Image (cartoon, rainbow, N blue to C red; front, side, top):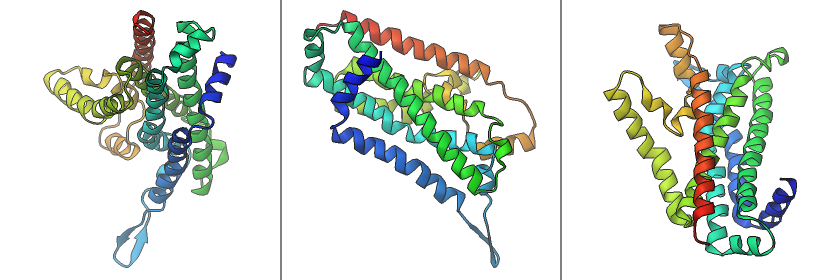
Length: 262
């Protein structure tokens, strides 16, 4: 796997789109959270900040994870572009001519998904520590609710794995990106609403991307719900379903790639 990733790095290290989309994620995630954490609300002659409590430990992990679930769209689009470019420029055939098997080509892309997920999670962890300490959090509380960082990693694999599947299925960059954004921003929300409205089991929460989104809900809404009706929300069903969806993406993408006409 290390050699496959090394070759993938050689492909993208001079690719401008890679650096632009990566920069969007690296810059916008902390900048957005900085603006929110410093947001002031005027009450009479005084200004108060009601959001900075969401950036102390341990609340910072859930809050950062929620906003990270929005900005992970940039790495997801990057995965689609890198995958569809292989088919658009016929470099996938060149990889096979140079000695790769189809499975090695596929696993190189899967490795990129996992690596980008790890790096995104590491970046969110570092930014979370900075925000937590800046807002008066205690260093002794850093690892409280730390499982939410692991939830963010699962969310990254879910989104990027889905993006890889779409890229292999569609093979055209613009169409694949459009379909990905249409589904994750509009269609899945509509499907979730219809399913949850029709059924009492809330099965809409277990749709491909929604299952990982449920791991990191908007913290302020969660805090309000707990104040009105304190209850413990079990996350393990969403963890299991997210892992199952990731495995479905993997085997479905693998099957399509091995059976397709190159």
